[in-house]
Each structure stands twice: as structure tokens, then as C-alpha cells.
Figure 1 (tube, rainbow, N blue to C red):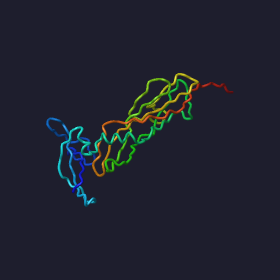
Figure 2: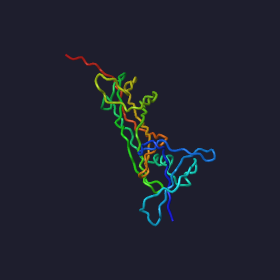
Figure 3: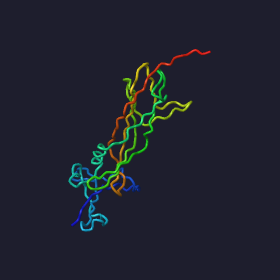
Figure 4: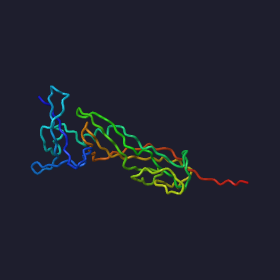
Length: 217
């Protein structure tokens, strides 16, 4: 008696670490994806899996074969906790000036990885920040960028900034981070997840004040 598992076939592009282009097939004029079927004797569970056959599966057939698809992984990915984007504001100290270019940035830029078990197999899920949506808190339109902004440097333009026009108010800006994922089933290549996941940021208080001129001397 054997146990079986299937694995998606990739185009032979020389890259054995990733699988961005699965191999398509055709069954009765319906486009599907090619999978390799592996088997292993139940009596020897520590033995290596051996390739047994190749099958063409169309959309909707994967669940019957317990295939780990990107859709299955994405459903799991959505249940996990991924880092919020940490919002940094300059000037620091929770205050900014009215009609002043307030600088925003985030240090949440690196991929995060979590490992889960899915259909009895170990799956790594990696989430990489690909865009950010900045909410200013004053009712103006949100602003989306593909860069995280940067700290203030004298003489350089701010990459992400906002000018508040109402003084003596406390606004609550925030930033959402959108992740693009990929997954890896045990020793198989990395495969893309074809939907993105957005994590909503927590608003922080920012007091908008008016500068006052003081005569000295």
C-alpha cells in the first residue's frame, strides 16, 4: 500500500528555487495545470518519495487530490498575524506645525516568514511589503506609494509628506502596509501567491500647533 501526494510542475527556466510559471495542460479543451504524483510505501514512512505519474488538474479538482495551491495557502495567510507598518513622523514628539511639510516614513520594509502545517505538510509563507497607504487623519484623500518614505535629510526633498492646514487640532494619521506573498512546501521551490494582503495600521495622535514669534533682546 502506498501514500500519495502531488506537486505542481514548473516551466524549465533553469531556476530551481522559484516557480513563477507553472506548466499548463489541456483536458477536453479546458486549460489546467500539470502536477507530478509522488508515492511512498506506507510501511516505510521515512523512505524518499518517488515520482509515479503526471496528471492534468483543472480548477476545482485540486481539493479532491488535497493539492496545496496558492489559494489554500492564501486562506491560511489571511488568518495569521503579520506586522503592522510602524509609523514614524517628523518633527518628532507628537507635534507638527500648521502649513508645514510634515515628513512621514515607516521602517517596516523587510519580509516576514511564518511556518504552518497544511494537509499534513510543512509550509513556509513569506510576506513582503510592496506598497503603503498613508492616511493623514484630517479628512483628505489617502496616498498610496510603493516606497516607505525616508528620514529627513537636510537639502533633500521628502518622499512622503503632508501639510496640515488646520491648527489647534489633534489628527490621527496611520499607514497600512500591503504584502505580496509566496510559499514553499517543504523542499519544493518557492511559488507565488497571486493576491495581496493589506494590514491596517494603528492611528497615532499628532497635534497640529501654530508657531509663535517671541521678541528677544
